[in-house]
Amino acid sequence: MTVVLLVRHGQARFGTSNYDRLSELGERQARLTGAHLAREGRSLATALSGALVRQAETARQALSGWNSDLRAAADPRFDEYPADALFDAYLPLAAARDPRLNQPMAALQADPRLFHYALTAVTGLWADGTLPAPRQEEPAAFENWQDFQARVRNGLEDLMVASAPHDTAVIFTSGGVIGTATALALGLDGQAAMALGHRTLNAGITELHYGRNGFALVGFNTVAHLRLAGGETLITYR
Image (cartoon, rainbow, N blue to C red; front, side):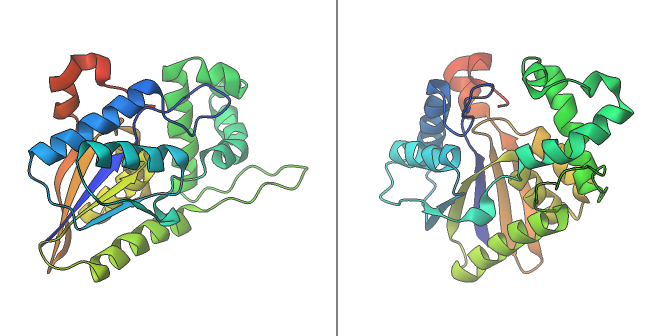
Protein backbone atom coordinates (compact mmCIF):
# COMPACT_ATOMS: atom_id res chain seq x y z
CA MET A 1 0.00 0.00 0.00
CA THR A 2 1.35 3.40 -1.02
CA VAL A 3 0.26 6.50 0.89
CA VAL A 4 -0.35 9.80 -0.90
CA LEU A 5 -0.81 12.95 1.15
CA LEU A 6 -2.39 15.85 -0.73
CA VAL A 7 -1.73 19.13 1.06
CA ARG A 8 -3.52 22.26 -0.04
CA HIS A 9 -1.39 25.40 -0.18
CA GLY A 10 -1.41 27.86 2.70
CA GLN A 11 -3.43 31.05 2.62
CA ALA A 12 -2.58 33.05 -0.49
CA ARG A 13 -3.00 36.77 -1.12
CA PHE A 14 -6.60 36.73 -2.30
CA GLY A 15 -7.94 40.10 -3.45
CA THR A 16 -4.51 41.53 -4.26
CA SER A 17 -2.92 42.09 -7.65
CA ASN A 18 -1.00 38.82 -7.27
CA TYR A 19 -2.91 35.98 -5.64
CA ASP A 20 -0.18 33.45 -6.36
CA ARG A 21 1.97 33.98 -3.27
CA LEU A 22 1.53 33.07 0.37
CA SER A 23 0.48 35.48 3.06
CA GLU A 24 2.36 35.47 6.37
CA LEU A 25 -0.45 33.36 7.79
CA GLY A 26 -0.12 30.97 4.85
CA GLU A 27 3.57 30.51 5.56
CA ARG A 28 2.77 29.72 9.20
CA GLN A 29 0.07 27.24 8.18
CA ALA A 30 2.56 25.46 5.93
CA ARG A 31 5.21 25.21 8.66
CA LEU A 32 2.64 23.90 11.15
CA THR A 33 1.55 21.26 8.65
CA GLY A 34 5.09 20.03 8.14
CA ALA A 35 5.75 19.94 11.89
CA HIS A 36 2.51 18.02 12.45
CA LEU A 37 3.37 15.37 9.85
CA ALA A 38 6.84 15.04 11.37
CA ARG A 39 5.30 14.43 14.81
CA GLU A 40 3.13 11.73 13.26
CA GLY A 41 6.33 9.98 12.21
CA ARG A 42 5.64 10.24 8.48
CA SER A 43 8.73 9.19 6.56
CA LEU A 44 8.73 10.63 3.07
CA ALA A 45 9.94 8.90 -0.05
CA THR A 46 8.75 11.54 -2.54
CA ALA A 47 7.69 15.18 -2.42
CA LEU A 48 6.01 16.97 -5.32
CA SER A 49 4.26 20.27 -5.82
CA GLY A 50 2.48 22.03 -8.60
CA ALA A 51 4.50 24.67 -10.43
CA LEU A 52 2.54 27.62 -8.99
CA VAL A 53 4.34 29.88 -6.52
CA ARG A 54 1.86 29.34 -3.67
CA GLN A 55 2.18 25.57 -4.05
CA ALA A 56 5.99 25.53 -4.26
CA GLU A 57 6.34 27.92 -1.32
CA THR A 58 3.99 25.81 0.79
CA ALA A 59 6.18 22.82 -0.01
CA ARG A 60 9.34 24.67 0.99
CA GLN A 61 7.90 25.91 4.27
CA ALA A 62 6.31 22.57 5.17
CA LEU A 63 9.37 20.49 4.37
CA SER A 64 11.53 22.81 6.48
CA GLY A 65 9.10 22.19 9.37
CA TRP A 66 9.27 18.47 8.65
CA ASN A 67 13.05 18.48 9.07
CA SER A 68 13.15 16.65 5.76
CA ASP A 69 16.13 16.60 3.43
CA LEU A 70 13.73 16.26 0.51
CA ARG A 71 12.94 19.10 -1.84
CA ALA A 72 9.66 19.08 -3.71
CA ALA A 73 9.98 18.54 -7.44
CA ALA A 74 7.64 20.72 -9.50
CA ASP A 75 5.04 18.88 -11.59
CA PRO A 76 2.62 21.19 -13.44
CA ARG A 77 0.07 18.39 -13.62
CA PHE A 78 -0.76 19.35 -10.04
CA ASP A 79 -1.36 23.03 -10.89
CA GLU A 80 -4.81 24.41 -10.16
CA TYR A 81 -7.44 24.73 -12.90
CA PRO A 82 -7.26 28.03 -14.86
CA ALA A 83 -9.64 30.04 -12.67
CA ASP A 84 -9.10 33.42 -14.37
CA ALA A 85 -9.81 31.97 -17.82
CA LEU A 86 -12.89 30.17 -16.52
CA PHE A 87 -14.30 33.35 -15.02
CA ASP A 88 -13.66 35.14 -18.29
CA ALA A 89 -15.40 32.40 -20.25
CA TYR A 90 -18.31 31.49 -17.98
CA LEU A 91 -19.16 34.45 -15.75
CA PRO A 92 -21.32 36.12 -18.46
CA LEU A 93 -23.35 32.93 -18.77
CA ALA A 94 -23.60 32.50 -14.98
CA ALA A 95 -24.65 36.15 -14.60
CA ALA A 96 -27.33 35.73 -17.25
CA ARG A 97 -28.81 32.98 -15.11
CA ASP A 98 -28.38 34.83 -11.80
CA PRO A 99 -28.28 38.67 -11.86
CA ARG A 100 -26.47 38.73 -8.50
CA LEU A 101 -23.35 37.72 -10.40
CA ASN A 102 -23.60 40.55 -12.93
CA GLN A 103 -20.78 42.49 -11.26
CA PRO A 104 -17.12 43.20 -11.99
CA MET A 105 -14.58 40.81 -10.51
CA ALA A 106 -13.40 43.39 -7.96
CA ALA A 107 -16.91 43.56 -6.51
CA LEU A 108 -17.19 39.77 -6.38
CA GLN A 109 -13.83 39.45 -4.65
CA ALA A 110 -14.82 42.05 -2.07
CA ASP A 111 -17.60 39.77 -0.82
CA PRO A 112 -16.20 36.32 0.12
CA ARG A 113 -19.60 34.63 0.11
CA LEU A 114 -20.58 36.07 -3.24
CA PHE A 115 -17.21 35.15 -4.70
CA HIS A 116 -17.58 31.58 -3.47
CA TYR A 117 -21.04 31.45 -5.04
CA ALA A 118 -19.67 32.80 -8.32
CA LEU A 119 -16.76 30.33 -8.31
CA THR A 120 -19.17 27.47 -7.69
CA ALA A 121 -21.37 28.59 -10.58
CA VAL A 122 -18.48 29.08 -13.01
CA THR A 123 -16.67 25.82 -12.26
CA GLY A 124 -19.98 23.97 -12.24
CA LEU A 125 -20.68 25.06 -15.80
CA TRP A 126 -17.14 24.09 -16.79
CA ALA A 127 -17.23 20.64 -15.18
CA ASP A 128 -20.66 20.01 -16.68
CA GLY A 129 -19.28 20.42 -20.19
CA THR A 130 -21.36 23.53 -20.87
CA LEU A 131 -19.98 25.63 -23.70
CA PRO A 132 -19.21 29.29 -22.90
CA ALA A 133 -21.56 31.94 -24.24
CA PRO A 134 -20.59 33.15 -27.75
CA ARG A 135 -18.50 36.32 -27.77
CA GLN A 136 -17.65 38.79 -30.49
CA GLU A 137 -13.94 38.79 -29.75
CA GLU A 138 -11.79 35.68 -29.95
CA PRO A 139 -12.24 33.84 -26.64
CA ALA A 140 -9.18 32.95 -24.60
CA ALA A 141 -8.22 29.29 -24.83
CA PHE A 142 -8.55 27.37 -21.60
CA GLU A 143 -8.20 23.81 -20.37
CA ASN A 144 -11.45 21.87 -20.49
CA TRP A 145 -12.64 19.73 -17.59
CA GLN A 146 -11.80 16.41 -19.22
CA ASP A 147 -8.20 17.50 -19.86
CA PHE A 148 -7.85 18.81 -16.30
CA GLN A 149 -9.16 15.56 -14.84
CA ALA A 150 -6.87 13.56 -17.14
CA ARG A 151 -3.72 15.44 -16.13
CA VAL A 152 -4.50 14.97 -12.42
CA ARG A 153 -5.14 11.26 -13.00
CA ASN A 154 -1.98 10.88 -15.07
CA GLY A 155 0.10 12.66 -12.45
CA LEU A 156 -1.16 10.33 -9.73
CA GLU A 157 -0.72 7.21 -11.86
CA ASP A 158 2.83 8.12 -12.81
CA LEU A 159 3.62 8.76 -9.15
CA MET A 160 2.35 5.28 -8.29
CA VAL A 161 4.49 3.71 -11.03
CA ALA A 162 7.57 5.42 -9.58
CA SER A 163 6.72 4.51 -5.96
CA ALA A 164 7.48 1.33 -4.06
CA PRO A 165 4.89 -0.41 -1.88
CA HIS A 166 4.67 1.21 1.57
CA ASP A 167 6.18 4.50 0.31
CA THR A 168 4.68 7.76 1.48
CA ALA A 169 4.51 10.61 -1.04
CA VAL A 170 3.29 14.16 -0.46
CA ILE A 171 1.89 16.52 -3.09
CA PHE A 172 1.51 20.24 -2.33
CA THR A 173 -1.27 21.45 -4.56
CA SER A 174 -4.64 23.24 -4.71
CA GLY A 175 -8.30 22.62 -3.99
CA GLY A 176 -9.39 21.71 -7.50
CA VAL A 177 -6.69 19.06 -7.79
CA ILE A 178 -7.53 17.64 -4.35
CA GLY A 179 -11.26 17.56 -5.12
CA THR A 180 -10.58 15.84 -8.43
CA ALA A 181 -8.23 13.26 -6.91
CA THR A 182 -10.79 12.54 -4.19
CA ALA A 183 -13.58 12.19 -6.73
CA LEU A 184 -11.44 9.79 -8.78
CA ALA A 185 -10.89 7.64 -5.69
CA LEU A 186 -14.64 7.64 -4.94
CA GLY A 187 -15.85 7.25 -8.53
CA LEU A 188 -17.64 10.62 -8.51
CA ASP A 189 -18.33 13.04 -11.38
CA GLY A 190 -16.97 16.48 -12.19
CA GLN A 191 -19.65 18.33 -10.25
CA ALA A 192 -18.76 16.38 -7.13
CA ALA A 193 -15.06 16.97 -7.75
CA MET A 194 -15.60 20.72 -7.85
CA ALA A 195 -17.85 20.64 -4.77
CA LEU A 196 -15.17 18.76 -2.82
CA GLY A 197 -12.48 21.14 -4.01
CA HIS A 198 -14.45 24.19 -2.90
CA ARG A 199 -14.60 22.82 0.64
CA THR A 200 -10.86 22.31 1.05
CA LEU A 201 -9.16 24.50 3.63
CA ASN A 202 -5.72 26.08 3.41
CA ALA A 203 -3.06 23.59 4.55
CA GLY A 204 -5.70 20.86 4.85
CA ILE A 205 -4.44 17.29 4.45
CA THR A 206 -6.19 14.66 2.34
CA GLU A 207 -4.91 11.08 2.47
CA LEU A 208 -5.24 8.45 -0.25
CA HIS A 209 -4.00 4.86 -0.12
CA TYR A 210 -3.13 2.98 -3.28
CA GLY A 211 -3.33 -0.79 -3.49
CA ARG A 212 -4.58 -3.60 -5.69
CA ASN A 213 -7.98 -1.99 -6.08
CA GLY A 214 -6.65 1.44 -6.94
CA PHE A 215 -7.00 4.54 -4.79
CA ALA A 216 -9.01 4.62 -1.58
CA LEU A 217 -9.87 7.74 0.43
CA VAL A 218 -8.67 7.52 4.04
CA GLY A 219 -8.93 11.14 5.23
CA PHE A 220 -10.23 14.36 3.71
CA ASN A 221 -9.36 17.99 4.44
CA THR A 222 -7.89 17.44 7.92
CA VAL A 223 -6.98 20.68 9.73
CA ALA A 224 -6.90 19.48 13.36
CA HIS A 225 -3.21 20.45 13.50
CA LEU A 226 -4.14 24.07 12.77
CA ARG A 227 -6.95 24.17 15.31
CA LEU A 228 -4.67 22.76 17.99
CA ALA A 229 -2.08 25.44 17.22
CA GLY A 230 -4.35 28.46 17.06
CA GLY A 231 -8.03 27.62 16.95
CA GLU A 232 -10.25 29.15 14.29
CA THR A 233 -7.80 32.01 13.67
CA LEU A 234 -5.71 29.61 11.56
CA ILE A 235 -8.62 28.26 9.49
CA THR A 236 -8.93 29.93 6.08
CA TYR A 237 -10.33 29.12 2.62
CA ARG A 238 -8.33 31.30 0.19
